[in-house]
Image 1: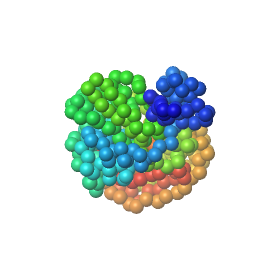
Image 2 (image 1 turned 90 degrees about the vertical axis):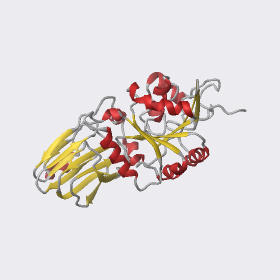
Image 3 (image 1 turned 180 degrees about the horizontal axis):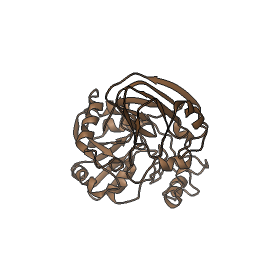
Amino acid sequence: MIEKNCSGCGAILQKDMVGKAGYVQDLSHDLCQSCFRLRHYREYKHVRANVDSSKTLDFIEEFDGHIFWVVDVMHLNQSLHDGLIRTLSKKDVVLVVNKRDLLPKSVSNNKLKQSIMRLLRDYNVSLMDVIFVSAKIERSLEPLYPYLSDAPVAFVGCINAGKSSLLNALLRSETLSVSPVSSTTANIIEILDGDYRVYDTPGFIKESDLPKKFTDECLLKLSPNKPIKPMVIQIYEKQAIVLGNLGYIEIDPVDHINVVSYLPFEVKRVKPDRADANLDLDHDFMILNPIYKTRHWPRKDDRIDLEIFDVGFISIQGKYNRLKTVMDIEAEVILRKAII
């Protein structure tokens, strides 16, 4: 029997294992049950695929055309997958910085580009172009069309970078399944649209197990559909910034510090001796079964970001004596030079 793939996620259609990837009641269908529910009922929690990254890397290695490397501007460090970047070293790569609309318009693309190039300076990737886009803003996509007309294009990147959403917007269709759940795209999907030949690929994984603790409400908050309004907190003495029940950041400033949250949910400031008790309260953002670990960070000057994989980032502007995080044990946190 000839295998047939779901037109939404690329999974091989099958009717033997209910609830598994590619399940359908009738093999004549074009969408698996998960993609059908996603498209018609927005039941995105059912869509998650097991992905063979080596197969995607082999595809990129042999691909003859342009590569659109899609990164999420809200999760830049999480977008830097070492295996993918090594494969891109000999390719014609356009860096497509997605979800630009989530950051304030006051932040210039030029400043963002400088920050991104600083992150990439230790990697051997030659970029043909850097383009800032949003799948929700049609005019931002215009610089991509000449590349689509010139050669076949493969869209690659890490999970939840928005590759499928971007492709749907470019082709003005809803062909591909789009979900806040990571790893929605199961296999490489070829799309022929007029003169365009494009390929959607499964996302590479550089994540913790934190998403397993996200509720449906968490997923919705972490997939905002409008710009994030930065929350600025001024700190003159030791304080803790509570991030729902995910954890908190404790800061002891040298003098005066601005903490700017670019998270898509509310945070609050409390005295350090109240921080642990606050984790037990109800919050705007709640994960399941948190278990906490403490980490002390090296002293840095100027402006730094704490990026929390799968969640977002917080900017700390000013000098501090001590910086401590108490976060869920599955939360991957990195410290970087501020991108804004």
